Image 1 (cartoon, rainbow, N blue to C red):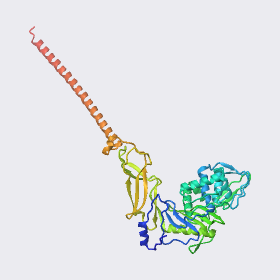
Image 2 (image 1 turned 45 degrees about the vertical axis):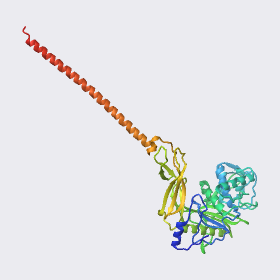
Image 3 (image 1 turned 180 degrees about the vertical axis):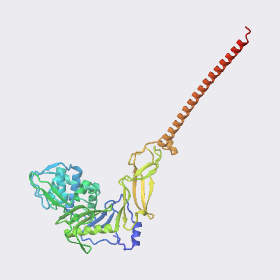
Image 4 (image 1 turned 30 degrees about the horizontal axis):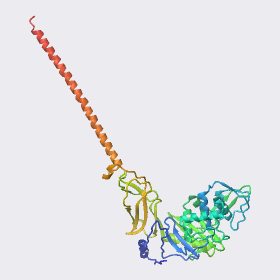
Length: 455
């Protein structure tokens, strides 16, 4: 990894030269204050951009212990009805953390999910896997397929709980960062892993059970840790999850996610020397991230990027957007006001186009250096326009013009009709007047004749 000095000049040069492409979530760089991590493997990422801020043996294949339950939980949320009930058919004597599930108990999928993600219950993980697939082999295949869709291509699943009684359940720190980031997009999962304490209601077989989260970063203000040479407690400002894990072969592990002022960071710690060290390492990484970087929302979800010209379309300009918005990981001292945008449209565009059709890209620049790029798509369906679109006239404008012309013609016709009626009325009045005058003249002539008659 590149080691940089602490000067503002170097940080500014870093700001100008790092390349962040949204489609490549493994872009990474390092800064001058990277902490010393005791764990065998670790990674720190910006959850909204996928940018790697720190890594150590991030691609080394290792056991994740109970962090495996993240994948089991995500599959359960995506494929099961959380309000459905499950009847436990036999006593489950699964080693490690558990809910001591006994034959005859009736619990909801939600109860089992919270027991697994909050208390790290191994027996709950087994029951959930049995609801997801009829056999363990089919569950394993299902879990691996989901991991591969996420991009976690080095993950092998042999158990729903992460217990090391079954060999070969392995992954990497980078894969876990991808898996946990995907899981945290789900609001149900996010709420569960941020739960400090969960209560499992009593049933006919078992009394009420109350479990505290195994992730001490959520709440513990008593345990003493040493982080970068300073004593502190595990509770971390802004922590929102995710999951702990520990076995004799995997060591002490944790995935820690935090959110501050819109910046969401996620740290993965694998095989730390002990329970306290995993939390100390995750705190050190999160501090490093927040001290050096922040997430800038360049384009929000649903925000119009620009109105672009699509030849032959019914509209003169068509609205475009970036699906999901676009975020940029920025060095702490870099001002977002310096970020500029440039749109490049694809060639040979023409109507019709479906809503969501990619029509080009928007590139982001910082002080003239390109720092990111995102696809832009149509925010609406683009219909074929009339022949007037060849002259840059939209259908709407054409219809307005035609309506105006039609209205003008109507006014003209009404005017002509009114003038015609007026003319006819005038002519009629003229004829009547002429007839009256003629009659009067005739009467005058007749009267004169009578006066002049000698008899």
